Amino acid sequence: CCKDSSPYVRKCAANAVGKLHPRCLEVGDESQAEQLVDIITTLLEEDGSTMVLTSAMIAFCEICPQRLDLLHGCYRKVCHLLTDMDEWGQVMVIDALMRYCRTY
Image (cartoon, rainbow, N blue to C red; front, side, top):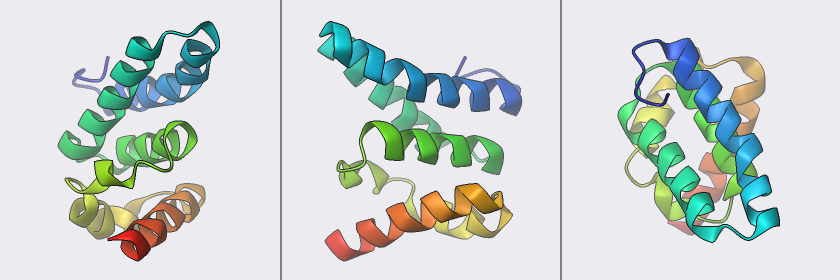
């Protein structure tokens, strides 16, 4: 789903990852949980749709907010597209970017 041509499908995939990750941790499936983090990282680095990036950043903040190193590859792109994201997503993204800047 994260490679689909429709940005709506990719957005839903990012939202689903945010919901699935805690379930994987509950059942102790660490490898599946790490694959979900990899999906979010791929969406952040490769997708150019602000709708998808917003959902991916929100999922990132939910599932691995301390792994700021994953933002290295998409930091400039997210900063550039921040003004085109929806208002609620902007709040989450700005918070994550501020933590990133303070760390790196």
